[in-house]
Amino acid sequence: MLALRQLLRRSVHPQRACHTGIATPVTSVADAVRTRDLQALDLSCSQDLLCRNLVCEKVGEPCICRLASVLERHAGTLTWLSLSGNGLEALPDALTALRSLRYLDLSANRCWTCAASRQAAQVAAQGVGEID
Ligand SMILES: [Zn+2]
Image 1 (cartoon, rainbow, N blue to C red):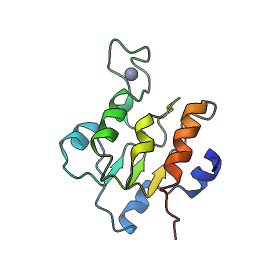
Image 2 (cartoon, rainbow, N blue to C red; image 1 turned 180 degrees about the vertical axis):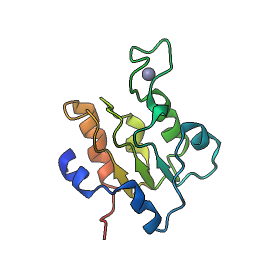
Image 3 (cartoon, rainbow, N blue to C red; image 1 turned 90 degrees about the vertical axis):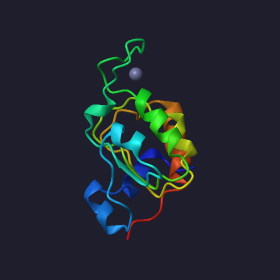
């Protein structure tokens, strides 16, 4: 099993997406919802991940509410994903269902200690390719 730190070492900087032959990353949740066959999603340091769900205990803080539904919607096509710099304390289970994922950046979040998040990252890492 891969440790989360190993996974992060394999991650790529968002600017490098243009070198991978993958479409230009979409950078907002609203655009991600609208886009068909979404391949690349860059939500690094994103205001979109601040929770606006009034019934969620994390309202006003970084949260995976909206992210989870976006990942579920694009589970079959998403190949490139950056969630870096959001201070997330957990990762959505939907991360484990990204069948096409090749690049994943989870750096600068706060999900080090959550066992469920670590497991999600490990499962996702199985689909993460090496960077040349
Ligand atoms: Zn929330």
